[in-house]
Length: 401
Ligand code: SAJ
Image (tube, rainbow, N blue to C red; front, side):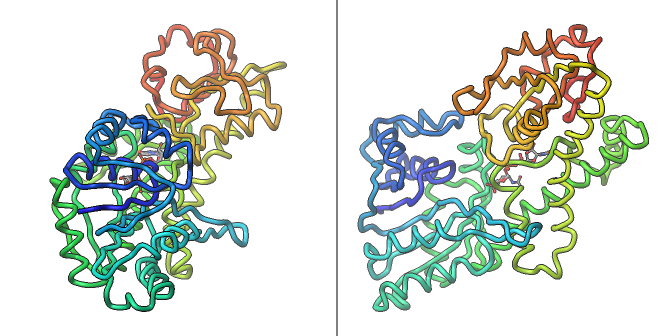
C-alpha cells in the first residue's frame, strides 16, 4: 500500500510513522517547509514522548518521506487542524478551511478505487463535504472513490501508546470504504475497530470531548462554590468520589488545548437551540481563568508592591504545549493589568516561545509574596512546603497540599 498523509502535526506525524514502520510506503505532506526538512533528516518538529525514535526508524527504513506536494497513492489520510472562528461574540463556529485545502490538494492525484480518510475532528457532515469537493474537482470519480471518517482519539503525551491500544471508530460513506479503512487500521491498531456511518463517527468524537468538557465544568463549578462557602474543594471531591457511582474530575484554572476547548463548539454550532448544557459548560470553563485573575487581584490588594509568582504556563501537566492554555492567558492578563511584579516559571517551556522572560523556580519561590499554581507539573508537586509556608498560595490544581 502507498499511503499519503496530509498534515504532519500531532496526529499526522505519529500516524504516518506508525504506518511506515508496519511496512507501508508513506509520503507525509505538509505546507511547512521546515517541518518537511526536519522530518526528512529523521528528527521531529513537535514534542511527544518516543516519537523521535519512531520517526527516525521510519525515515531510516526508507518507508517514510516528507514532501510539500502529494503524489498518487492508494490511501489518502487527512490529518489537518480544525480550529474555530468566533462569531457574534459568544458563539464559535468551525473553520474547515484546512480540511478543504487538503482535499483540493489531493484532488488531482486521486485515482479510481482510492480510499480517502478524514482523521481531523470535524463537525457532522464534513466527510460528505470532502466527497462533494472531490467530485466537484474530478467529476469522473463520482461513485469511484471511497471516503471515511476515522477520528483520532489519542491523548497528547501518550500518543504512541493510545494510537496502538485505543479502539478505533470508522465511519465510511460506503461499505467498501469501511472495509478498506478497517484493513488499514488493523495493520497497527490492537484496539477494536468499530464500524458505523460517517455522521455518527463525526458526532461520537465530538461527544467524547464534550463529555469531558461538561465533567470538568462540573468540577470547576464545585470549586467556585467551595471557595464561596470556604470549604476545601479537594477534600469535598475526594469524599464525594468515595461513592461507588460518583467520579468527579479535577478543577483547574480553566480548560485548554486544541481539542476539549474547541470541539464542543462544533456540536453547539450544528444544533444551537438544543446544545444548552454543552454551551454552558464551555462558558463555565472559559470563565474560570477570569475567576482566578480576580482571586489574585483580591490577594494582591493587601500588598503595597506585591510580587506574584506564577507556576506553570502549559495547558496541562508535563507537556510543552501552550495552545489555548488558560495558565498562559492568566499570566498575560496579570502582566497586562499590572497587578504586581509578575514572575513566571515553567520547566517545560523556553523563554524564546514567549514575549516575556521566565524566571528560575528557586527565584520565584524565594521572592514571591503570592504564589499562583497554574499547572501541576511534576517539579511543582515536589516543592518543599516549608519553603512557602509564609506565602499566600492560590493553588488552582490542588498540587501544593
Ligand atoms: N483538565 C482539568 N481537569 C481534569 C482533566 C483535564 O482541568 O480533571 C484540563 C486539562 O488541564 C487541560 C484540558 O482539561 O487544560 C484538556 O486536557 P485533557 O487531558 O482532558 O485532554 P486533551 O485535550 O489533552 O486530549 C483530549 C482527549 N479526549 C478525551 O479524553 C475525551 C484525547 O483522547 C483526544 O484525542 C484529544 O482530546 C483530541 O485530540 O481530541
